[in-house]
Length: 286
Image 1 (cartoon, rainbow, N blue to C red):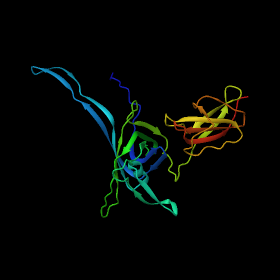
Image 2 (cartoon, one colour):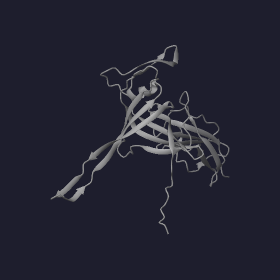
Image 3 (spheres, rainbow, N blue to C red):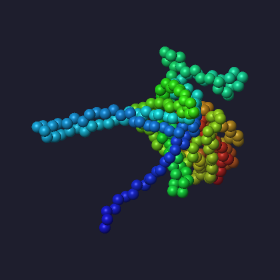
Image 4 (spheres, helix red, strand yellow):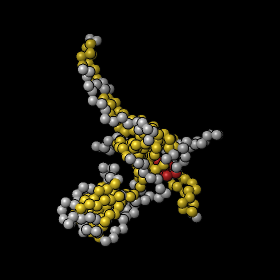
């Protein structure tokens, strides 16, 4: 009988640079005009130590490589002032009569301490199946990114495709990147908007309690849930607002609420800024 070997559980085929998003202290923005991101690990190497006696290798301590971060090279097909602002700082200039129209960009003044923000970069890649359908997206997140100052050239007959160099380095105890799979890409909107959580309420196991299920579930392990219950009307916070008057919730425990009253659930960042929310009329056990 031939030897049996366990087959790998996952065979992931990915293609395309589907979306790049940048998470800063002011929120997250994305752009789908990038067509390539190159990633080069930054490695510190400790040379091998070998003991050779009379031409014979007696012992050796092997070479050791330690990853300290990544250098990312992002190729975009258009000039994106918001991206450049995050990478190197400076000032975006808006039309005084039309605050939504960008009319210029000034880089940081030479010799000043002005520089770009520290941010997280998320790179999305599509995963296809044998029928040619996208089944999910791979997202690789690089922490603590900082941009390198940029410059722009031009060429006859060719659209400018700026290249941006970004350095990423993990904090103590943090992985150098995180890979996750998501069902859909984030929606790109004109302004930051509170995401939508779809809530379902069913009777809980104890009188006066309800069990809430959420779609989609939070993807970032650092994010958290908060809830408000037993009120007749709830106004959800806006995107990025600090969530106040809500109670921490682990996403599992049943919630005490009067039947037919409302329950609001907010997904927020670790520092309490609202990202998504939903509202449902409670069905409590009686």
